[in-house]
Image 1 (cartoon, rainbow, N blue to C red):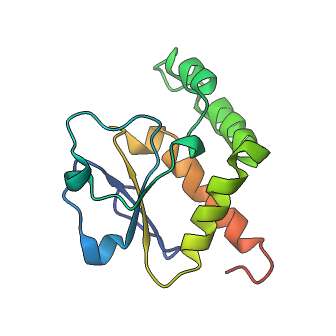
Image 2: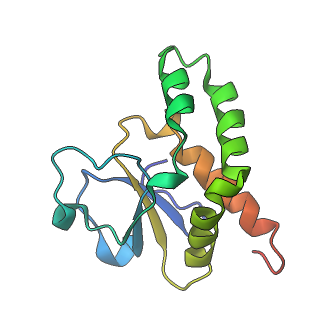
Length: 136
């Protein structure tokens, strides 16, 4: 998934990779904790939405079993958290950025992006955009 945009205007990159200002557009860090060993200058993020990440409880539950057997349940639980009003402001902000002319790059420190929360967030945002009045 890294670097892809799939035509949605949403890219995903690791914060440890060098920024590509023109291609990345607006860079949004979507991790709860600041990435280790990365300065704010090197990260080159425009926004940090730590509240859009899975709750500590959900993240802890998911990481108790490294086999991947919990991923489907994790996806369902994280989607439910994104539906919660506590995430409404961050979701609305991201949807607003996606309506702009610039690409949006979700930046994360997660090593295995495909097994984490970012693909779930991308899918959630794409679905929300498609089902908004006047959505894409």
